[in-house]
Amino acid sequence: MRAVLTDGAIFAIRKENNMALKTNYELMRDALEHRKAVPAFNIDNLESALAVAEVLRETGSPVIVQTIPRTLNYGGVSTYPALMRELTADCAADWAMHLDHGSSLELAAKCVKAGFTSVMFDGSLLPFDENVRKTAEVTAMALPLGVSVEGELGTIGGKEEERT
Image (cartoon, rainbow, N blue to C red; front, side, top):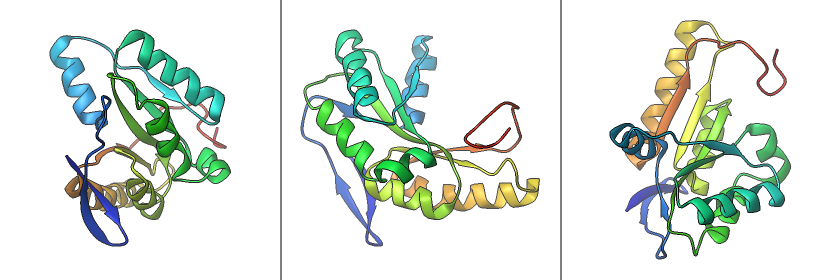
């Protein structure tokens, strides 16, 4: 059972089917224990979601399904977790729904409310102290609701979204 933020209140929910919606933390903890990798797949449309659902069914291995803010602007925050829940209703493999490179506490809260089980706050372009503070705010909001949090406190280099 996990908690989800809905209109400022916490409601416990449990999806009653074969699939197990997990947090990234739960998937990674299990992967570490069993010395396995967990792939992450970005979805941005129906075709990519169908492909990830097929991977889950065919392999039975856990995956992280992730979206980025630009995708959410295109399709809506609640669309992607609902789509993946429907596509994996007959699937026994564990998976997580992750916001990758989120840009604000507000976006993270919307994702949590929509059913994401993991959120990332990317403040890598902010001054370090501000990035740490904002990452802590996202963490304080998400962890009590059973949602794992990732923060990008430095830069890796490369292209993320519109940045270079």
